Structure formats: C-alpha cells, structure tokens
Length: 304
Image 1 (cartoon, rainbow, N blue to C red):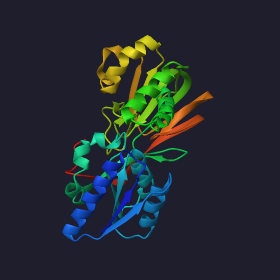
Image 2 (cartoon, rainbow, N blue to C red):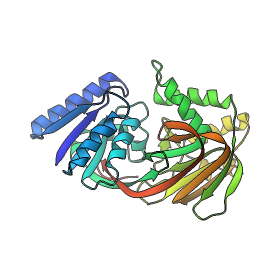
Image 3 (cartoon, rainbow, N blue to C red):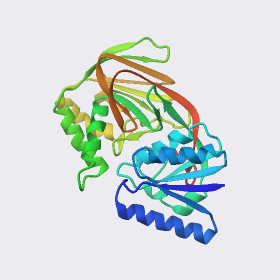
C-alpha cells in the first residue's frame, strides 16, 4: 500500500511540523517503507493532492501533518473511496477531531500511525461542502469566524483564539430566530444562541459541544441552545466546555438534544454557519449524515 504524507507548514508551530517530518522519514527509512511526500502551498491544496492520489485507484494511506483544516481537506477528497485510508499527525492549533479518539500524543506516535488500522467514520453532507467533525449555526459559528482572525496573531493558541472570539461575539448581537427541523419531527421555531450538528465531539480548541457523539454510529448529535442573557451565559460556559451540559440542570430550560440523520435550519435574516471552521452567512442550510464515509486511521484502535 502506498503511503503519502501531506505537510502543511502553515499549521501550528514550525518546530513541531519539522520534528514530525524527521521522525516520519527516519522511521520509513529504517523499515524500508517507500514514502511519498508533498507540501501544501495554498488553502485547499491538501484536498487537491489527496484527490489526485485517490483518483489513481491504488490503495493508499494518506497522512496529513497539520491541524483540523488539513485533515478536513484530505477527508473531503477521500470520502467514499474505499481504497483510501486517512490519518493525521496533529500539529495544528486546535486538533479537535482527534480528541474524540484519544490524546494528541497518541496520534503523534509514528510507528503506531504507520501500523494503524482504519475505522469507518461518518461525515456531514451540506449544500456547501463535506464536513468531518462538527457544523453549527449561530453564536458559536460567529465565534469560529472571528477565531480564524485571532489565530493569525502571534502567540495566540487555538483555545486562546476561541476565547478571544467568544468575548467579541458575546459583546455584540446574541441570538437568532431559527426554524429547525430534525428528521420527520415537527419544526422547532425559537430564538437560539446556536444549533449544532456533531459527528465528532469537540470544536473550538477543546469545547466538548457534542459529548455523546459517536463518529461511527450513522447518526448526528443535534444540540440547540436557546438565547440567554450575557451574565447567565458566562456562568454556563465552563460546564459547556467540559461537555456537562446534556446532564446539567442549569441547561434544562434552554437545551434541546436530539439524535438523528438530518437537521434543516432556515431563518429570515442570514446567520453565520460553521463547517469545520469554514464560515459564511446563510439563510438556509441542512446537515445530513453520510454514514461510514471515511476510512480513518486510529493508532491503537477506536476508543471513542
């Protein structure tokens, strides 16, 4: 089986990227593994490189060395391709998707990665793009939009960028009038802070928004939070970040949690929508599960 490693030098710290690159090269040389390498030059390049490898039809393991953005690009090119397996060496600022399966250290073990077996995981189909981890509309999507700007600042980590963006958004307009339909259930119309569809559990540099999501169950976890005031929101954030909101009495009157295959959102005015960190304002969007769409390499096997 071919092994292709796609490096994203723009992700995370350069010393981490270079260190992983040298470890991969040394391991492959020692084990006699033929290693193919490519370096991304622009946003979307990882998807193009992975797509070209997938189109050959040859069995291939494609590893990204980067963050969630690199992984999502490669996954988008590999979706539905049974001969393609996808792995990630997480050296980005957030590394949220792999948190569902284990620690960053686990995914940085070169030998374990090269010997890893694939796990079939779901993806999220939308009208705009394929997503791997988590999509949302509302406050947290607006936070993701501003988070991308803060991440460009020196010395700002993924979690710090998220917190800075959160403060900015909380000081602005909060709440959107949304009409939400999940599968065949009656529509829900209310003023929401946000509505979330998760295949993975974490986003925003460690926020556990969908704590019970199983990336392989063929379903999405839907979390809707009704609008609250700023003071109450500040008190709820800690529980939300730790993933305690589904069982917390503090969320009882504002939380809607459902599991299903499709969620459709419409609103009269546009709302910011987040697709694994890619954000844009829309007045209508749907999130639909794409079951068993990707062969994802998990060192040591699935433990989600």
